[in-house]
Each structure stands twice: as structure tokens, then as C-alpha cells.
Amino acid sequence: MPEKHTEKESGELLPRCSECTRRCRSRQHADLVSAAITQGDDEPLISYLSWVCHAAATGTDSAGRTPLHVAASCGRTQLVEWLVRVRGVPLDTKDAESGMTALQRAVFYGQLGTVRTLLSLGASALTQDHADMTTYDGVHADRPPLVELTPSAPCEPYVWGANPWFSIGVERIKARPVPEPLDVFRRAGLWIRQIAMSKFHTVFVTQSGEVFSCGHGIGGRLGHGDEESVMAPRPVRALRGERCVQAAVSAEHTVLLTESGGVWTYGLNHACQLGHSPPPAQLTAPRLVDWSRGRRDRITGVCASRYHTVLWNSEALYCVGLNGGQLGQHKDENADKRFILPRKVTMLDRSPASSSVSAGGALRLTHVACSDGGTAAATAAGDVLLLSEYRCRRIASRLLNVRALRLAGGAPDPGSLPAGRAAESRPEPLRLLVITAAGQLLLWHQQWPTLTRCVPDLRRGLSVADAELDRHGLILLAESGQAFTATVTHGKEAPAPAAAAPVTHSRAVPGHPAGAERDRHSPPKQATKGDSRPKPAGSAGGVPTARLHLTRLPHIHRGVSVTCDGTGGSAAAVQCDPRAFLLEVPQVSPSQLRRDLGRLLSSADETDSIHDLVLLVSRVE
Image 1 (cartoon, rainbow, N blue to C red):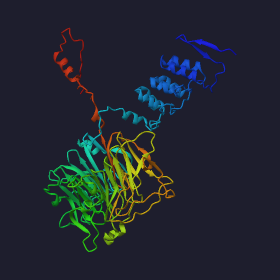
Image 2: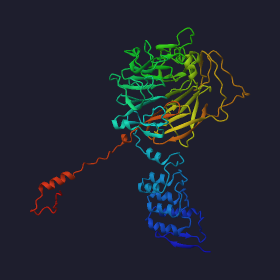
Image 3: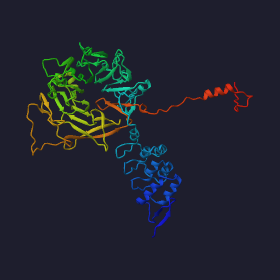
Image 4: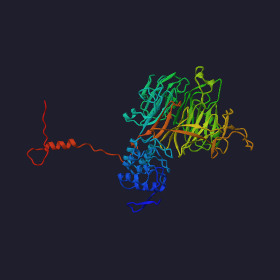
């Protein structure tokens, strides 16, 4: 049967096949429909689509777009509503090029009226495109390139979790499944610089140097002068006007570092981790550690765990508390296992990393982290060292771009713990997380011989700005400001766990950024062709890799840092205020109605011919 042709207003001939049905898949028809939507009004378009093709509402053009995608991009609100309500077009259909839905395309092209219509029709804003970006992610990614997310910008805290010990700062014992802002600081006009969280309490440090705390107060860990529990953050007022620049917390005590280099501690002191002599049983308010007063080598960083406290600067590392193998001191059965005052870690000077320092040079520290079972340090020479089990191990070498270290798990030597504490200790595997300046994550496990590079399971690149270890996995913060929770999977061919042999010192295999540990006096092992040892699940550039399974955390779009209590129960994030980067702030002029009416009243006269407004006011008794 011959084809019928109809002449369009533009003069082109549109072929209309008599065999066109509701199952039509003609790309030519779909391209003509897309071209027509970009011009003309909505009502004629509706009539045109009903006539041109039986499947005009659901066809896909050569660019992989449906009419709903094109209509949403062009802001055809009436046409969008007709396609959804009358023709039943699915709202969450993705285009072929980028995987965007109609809502994402409307947001991308700034069609706010169409966005409102799509949301009212039930479109989901959480659908991800081919780059794993939701509608909100696309909006927040559209920021000027000069915007930099730093703690110096106005920031506020976001908290979430189970809140069993009032550690997230809300005034009601109620879990928060998703991150929500903590309004107490916004109402007070305070911006947050750092959040330090433990299982039982949380410390907030403002940009002005003030300290707030909340949580379970037994033992004085909150620093309010008593042992009462506090649900909402309350200021710590015993610093005598000192500005706090960093806070570190453990489950039982708190350490504060002030701008002048002073170290203040308070809380329980069962392991002498507070650093005071004579050692008190506990302190309910901050007290300055006399050892840190007026020192030439001013302390620039602090860390805290349940059994010890770490004080450090670029030249030296000092530890105080229970010597369970994590202080960098040798085991001595006849000596007291508790160090009352901070003691310099001399094991670093005799570590394998010290051999890479030139004669007369110093072992310069750049980053330090600690946990119940160990202390980790990164040097300017690119070495990552771990103090645990009464020895110093080199975990990595020539790793010059370290951004941060995170250490979790482990436990002190059971023989060093008091009788009552040994039963409480439930050791977890010691884990070390290295965040590089390039945004990569390197994970070391107590049962793995080498560092493992963690690869996210996203379909786009992810550069990590901050991360924290918890019992179940990781909490990640991307440089773009988004937050994720992650679990680590090593695949079926991951090497079987094997405990490392106890040696006095160990060193990395030369030429490997995360070399396997071996005795410094033993010769290197030669690989053989018949080597049947299990290989890592994956590798990239000679470094074993592991897969990170990410879950997006809502409401975190401009994050600066993240923290958690270590158990996976509660967490917090510092996020920049959305108004901090506005280049053009809208100004609303004050109302002039009162002034204009007053001028009218003062100049009004019934006898003149200027005013044509007469107000008749009657007083009703």
C-alpha cells in the first residue's frame, strides 16, 4: 500500500506508514518527535504527537531519549503532565547517553517549573545515573571552581546513629537513621571546626576555640566538674581562656591541645593515661599536664586510646599510659607497666626507617594515629611505622603523599592488664588506614602481609578526603563533599590469614610501597616458578586491591570531615554552611509602607485637590 505524506509547516514531508502500530520502533518517527518538541507550544504538540505515530509517547530517538526526556529538558510542563497522566509514560526511565531521568534532565537545564511538576507526579530524586549521581548530587556538584571545602569556612555538625549514650547531642533518646544538623550551635551562632567521638561521649571544638561535650559523664570524661550525663552539648569552662585547636577522645578520657601548646586531660585514669603526677583516680575537669608547660619542642598533635595517650610534634613522639606493647617501649617484667609521665619513644630512632635518614638528620613525623592496640606514625621520608606487640614495624616505604592515618582495633598485651580489665578486653584485629594526597585508600590488616588499595565500586572516580574506621567497615568522605559508608570485600582468592612472626624489627621488601614484613637479618626470599601460595584477589601496579561496597549517606553534600564512635553505633560529620559560598547574596530592602502612610497622613487635607484618598475611621466602643 503506498505511503501517505503530510506536509509540515516547515515544508518537510513526514512519511506516515499505514502499518504504524503501538509497537512502532521507528527511529525516524522518534527523531521527528524530538525535533518537534524543541519548538512550538504544548497544546499543538499534544495533538501532533497523537497523530504522527501510535508510539510517539514511548519511542526512543537516535540519541537514546524519550519524548519525556526532551520535554523535561525544554521545560514543556503541560506536555510532561500529559505524557505521564494520559499516556502513562514511566517517570524513572533513563536516557541511553548518561542514564539521567526526566527529573535529572529538568534540573540540569534549570527548568524549575517542570521539576515541581515531576516531583508532584511522583518522580524519585534518588535514582542514580550512569555516574552513580542522584538529582541532589547533580545540583550540589554545580558549584564555582573556586569553592574549597575547608574547616576554616563556616561549618556545622551533622549527627546520626543509635544514641544509646547521648553521644550525638540530641535532647531525646531517639535514634537518627540519617544525618541531621545539630541546631544548638546554629542558634548560638557558633561554627564547628572539629568533632571527636567515642563510644560514651563526644567533644565539639568551635572555630573560636571553645569546647563543648555531651554524653555519659561517669568518670568525669565530659569535663564539666561532675559526673552527670549531658544530652545536649554543654561548654567546658575550665580552660582558663585558652583556645583549643584539637581534641582527642577515648572511651574513658579526653585530651585537649591548646593554641599555646598546652595539653589538658580529664576523665578516668586507671592506666595513668592522663599524664599527671601523682596520678589521680579521675579528673572531672580539665587540668594542664605540667610536663607540657613551657616546652621548647611544643606539642602539635594529640591522640587518645583507652589505655594510653600520644603527644607528638615533627621531631618526637611521646606516650603515656599502660605499656601493653603499643607505647614503643620494650617489655620489662620487673618494671611498672604504667608510665605516669609522657616518655619519648626511642624505638623510632632504632627503627628500620631511621636508616633512610641522612647522617645528622632527624626522623620527621607528619601524621600520627593510635588505637587500643597500637600507635602508627608517618614520616617525611615516606615510611609508615606501627608500634605494637613491643616492636616497631615498617608497614610501607616511599609513601610520600600521606594525607592522614587512621588506626583501629587491637588490644594491649593481656599480661599487662589488671585482673579486672583482662576479662573486659575483646580484641579486634588491628587495622591501619592510610589516606593519600591523591585521594586513595590503603588498608593494612593485622592478618595481611601488605597494604591493600581499596577500590570503590562506583562507576565514576572517587577521591577520598577523609575516612574513619569502625567495627563494620569505613565511613568515607569524598573531596566533592559526599559521604558514604563502606564494607570491604577481598574476593575468593584473598590470601589466607597468617600471623606474623614476632621479630624485634622488621623492614619492607625493597621496591614495594607496601612491602611484606620479614626479619631485617634474614635474606630475601626468591620467588620460584612452582610457587603455589594464594595470590591477592586483584592488583593494580603491583599493589593488591580490595573492593569497597559503598552506600550513600543522605544530607551530606559539603562535608569537611567525618568521625564515628568506633563501634558503628553513632557518627558525625562537619559540613560547610550552604550560605558560605554565595557570590551574590540577595538583599531584601526594608518595608517603606509605614513611612509612606505617615507622610500621607501628615500632608493630607480634605480641602485640597491633590489627594484622592480619604480614610474614614470610626471608633467602636
